[in-house]
Image 1 (cartoon, rainbow, N blue to C red):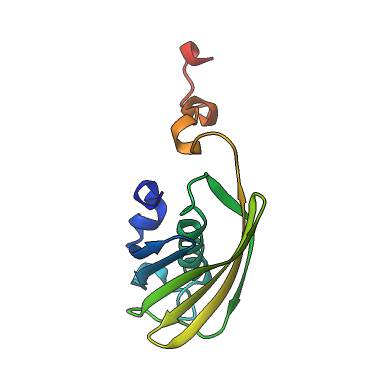
Image 2 (image 1 turned 120 degrees about the vertical axis):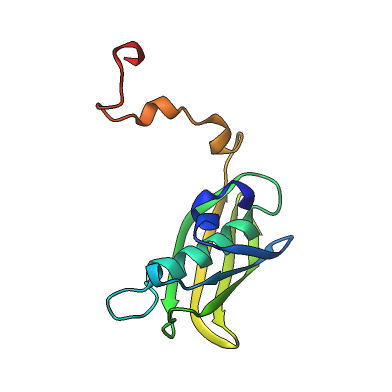
Length: 145
């Protein structure tokens, strides 16, 4: 799943470890990730945690998506910081699961994330997506209408 995740890989996120219900990922905070307070934008910290969650909950085989997630920001991260997100499965029941992710800079906790997953039926969405369904009027040709 991570190999097809252009958003996360494009931001330099690296998959360090991956196992049944677990994942460890790393990201360096770049200048483009810093907000007006000169700290890492929370959206990037969330993205790192969410990607670790996605890798962990998809480790069992069925296509699994987020049903919801919460994050608590504990401390700021800064440009140049190397953040490591460690995801651990807490429980799975039916098609659902609960996963916790800690985002750290060295030993310091930056954020705590809890994700709720749901396995879906069928094949991976990226294998069946109709790319013509999302065209804007300026890119739609007469032939495709």
